[in-house]
Amino acid sequence: MNGPVPVEVLKQHLIDPEICIRCNTCEETCPIDAITHDENNYVVRADTCNGCMACISPCPTGAIDNWRDVLKAESYSVDAQLTWDELPVQDDALAGQGAIGEAAEGAAAGTTAGDAESAEPAIGGSDLVRGSVVPPWSAAKPYVNLYNHKAPVQATVVGNYRVTDASTESDIHHIVLDFGKQPFPVLEGQSIGIIPPGTTADGRAHHARQYSIASPRDGERAGYNNLALTVKRVTKDHHEQAVGGVCSNYLCDLKKGDVVNVMGPFGSTFLMPNHADSHLLMICTGTGAAPMRAMTEYRRRRRLKGATGKLMLFFGARTQGELPYFGPLLNLPKDFIDTNLAFSRTPGQAKRYVQDAMRERATDVAALLRHEHTYIYVCGLKGMEDGVLQALQAIAGEAGLDWQALWQRMKTEGRLHLETY
Ligand code: A2P
Image 1 (cartoon, rainbow, N blue to C red):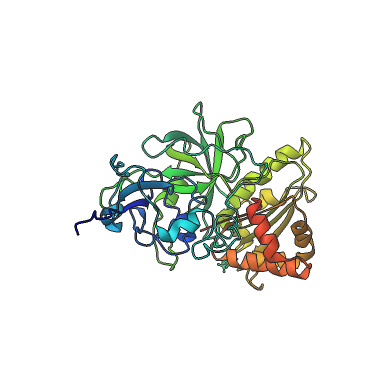
Image 2: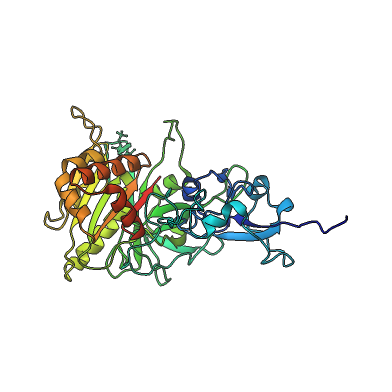
């Protein structure tokens, strides 16, 4: 009766700590809470992950898409992964033998976990993913991961200005970094990683922090190899407790001529369409304005060359003084961009959020929703995502549009991009 004992080889899902920029996108996306993190690493629970692949596309760096064939009984524990500085090498004897596991087969084949029997293919990778995981069809091809934390590129600070009113608490800076003769090609909607100098309390090098690029592909100053970031100085955590944000304080205090270590660029889906008659519906709060500024400025430069699509912007801040780029934004011609501001803490006025402003402009938003060349971008506070999607649903419903069908279509066509934090 001594038959062979089946040896199970698992294709274990791992996250590369060398590339990961700890942006939390994977943990937020995972529909079954298989991803967790500590202050060091983001990791995948081998006994929970079913390989549904929902997390793969949204990851801006590709760190998420790593796999090792291991004996199931010897799979890497969460505790072990949390200590890693780099991925373990693949054991040659097991290479190519791993299986993701029974629960995952349907998902890996293109259906979401739990609906393996359904004939309907998953939309956008997983119905639990609310935005597009593909770029607009006409987006330019992005470069990603040209530089990592082991081999960052050095950029020189050529400008650092406060872009919120000096009398307000919100200290938001516009920081311009120049790459000189080193290649650093970017597109609007992409982000970069900044590696703050120094170490954590336990002596480890700081991880990079991710910032959206606020300038167009051809430079903050057209024709220059530079880019801008919009950075808010972090002085309080989500519970209003005093904290000093390591990277934001470092960036906001930089002087002209200082040199910064940069990783990236990152991001291959939150990109703008390149066809001239495409419309942009942009919704943001606070520093979420960065990609909208990049896209708007690129369109402004292209408009001179014949771009005709509409631009509609909804921008929320606590007060007028706390809205970054308030002055320059209002200087843009009204026939170029339809700007709608929403302030939540103006003394003597009712609280107003971007979604309230959208409902007030329902007729014009609905007209954009009807148009198959409309692309929606949402960037800013996590909390706004629900509110904005609800507003879109209500506006579509009142206009006689089937929001559920439109939402799915926009997702698969790379026309609904959400980046919230
Ligand atoms: P609030 O006054 O309620 O905080 P911040 O300055 O923190 O980056 O926020 C930018 C703006 O986003 C503020 O006006 C803030 O309002 C607003 N905001 C907060 N929560 C939401 C939400 N759930 N939906 C839309 N806007 C929000």
